[in-house]
Image 1 (cartoon, rainbow, N blue to C red):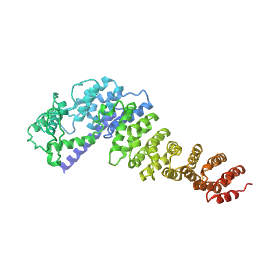
Image 2 (image 1 turned 45 degrees about the horizontal axis):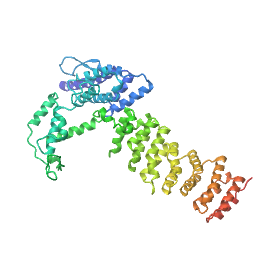
Image 3 (image 1 turned 30 degrees about the vertical axis):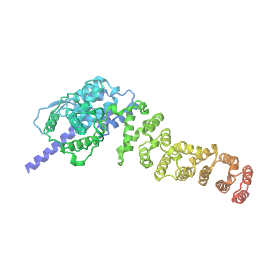
Image 4 (image 1 turned 45 degrees about the vertical axis):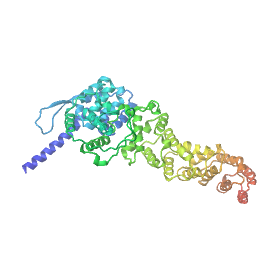
Length: 530
């Protein structure tokens, strides 16, 4: 019983120590800094979230500085291991945080170091170097940031063990004992190796000779040019335990440290790309969105959060973002998932942002329709139209109406929006758009759909509409679609028809040559005026 009580008491002490340690790590920070700390502790996307928090704080307080945040991280903290008879030690506060926090912190500093005091950042890096058990990724990120700041630029980022493994892999790929090609990049460098490197090298030194699993290259061998080598990868039979463990380690790090292992150079695109004009945090979001669009997996909540960057962009930046992501070229099956993620963040998109996205995502696809729209395209269009009706009217519906060569596929899609997504106010807006264009059979179908939905027409608007009927009617004397639309006007909107309208419409009907001419004339005669 005493042993059980002692074990339970020890577990409670351990738990209390962990809670107290975490609280001690954050209690020194002010309110703004605590938000940054929580963002950096929020997982693999912590660096991006911290950057978003920082930019939000900057907009609220343009004079905000990270100097106090860095100084707090560098303050000394007295600590000791729990339940161990070890003396108290003094370490910088940053060393007491978990490795994921340090990786996110360094990735965050990569993005904002240009606006920070160089001495403060170097002091923080010096404090991180006091960690007795540093993570390899933290060490690499520290050296990368030192290189960006102009310190220790000659020291390579990779370890001696990594260099040795890559050279060995290169030797096996070329099938000889000479290192060629990119393997030469890893020769001639001397790096201090820690205990981990030394142990790794001892394992490599005692490995048995591996059996070659390659087939010969095509053609004759010459010393002047390299040959193409056809490599036969035989799955697990060609991999020994060492190679398999390296693969698992690399894949695990890629999943857990996606943000941390991305260097500042990788975040910046080529100089000739339009993405250069975007701020750093938007460039990071562009890379993340591009990865999402190329992935085949389901998107979770953290994936959706990256689209919040759209609310931080001005119209020009949204255009650059759409161009960089090549949104017009996206396959249609991606559209519903993308539109759902774009509409998920709150608040709603601004008019200019929504209009730019709609034009980039949908306009070209709708104009190029030669058959009825696919289910994915219809879903995407209706989702955006329901949430952003005014941008949809100006960025998609109006350009489609203006296009002279639209056909039935475009008309069917617009009729779906009119019947299922647009309120009366926006139907009137679309109807007024038709007054400024030359009518076609497809446009007549859209106007007929608008009239069937019974929008609340004013007398002035109905008068303008009848003027269009009279002026554009002569080219549709044999059009059944035009005759049906006229019949709808005379039956559903008879109360709007005045004596002046009746006289104008009578002249228009006299030119009609369809089988509906008598029905039109009878409907016009039935209209009485008080």
